[in-house]
Amino acid sequence: MIEDILTEWWERLQTCQSCPIRKEQNKGPTAYTGTVASPLMIVGEGPGGVEDEYGVPLVGPSGQLLDKALWSVGITRDRVYVTNIVKCRPKGNRTPTPEEGRFCAELHLAEEIRLVRPKVIVALGKVAFQFFNGGPGSIMRSRGHWLTYEGIPVMPTYHPAFLLRRTGKDLVESKWQVYYDLKAAVEKAQ
Ligand code: URA
Image (cartoon, rainbow, N blue to C red; front, side, top):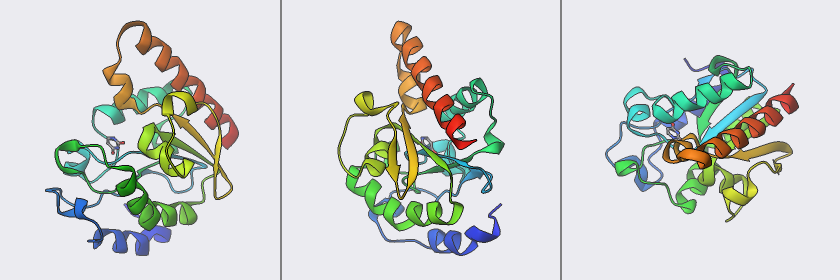
């Protein structure tokens, strides 16, 4: 359900044909989940197969892990606003290039942020981090360190898909890092 403040934004997004990703065998742009009234916005990379099917961001395996991570810091999905840098699914779930990320985010996410006006943003993974960083940078080195975007504090952390690829001690360490990053974001948003 698209809330009133996002109706025009959503209409523009739905008809967007501005970049080649829209033509890469996907069902079109995905919207958001959660609540526009939330002080906390979570920004992922872009829709995968499940998200493309349902038109909703972060509802596949990565989204399910995100839900658990949110739960660990005492918050549920319906109390945050979840969206993506890139709105359409790149072919074969490839990672969008930084240029594609910037192009789509400047066209749609930037306006989404202006309309939703979150108090705090969490950037999941490299593509989201690099957009808010305004250029290249390492998510491994930058996670846990606050950035600012249009006056809004942004906490970069690992993408759940990265956690899904980790094993053993690395996985345990990364999960704790995400926990501390999300905890810091939730506390700042209060
Ligand atoms: N990964 C993301 O970053 N976003 C989605 O919507 C799905 C997978």
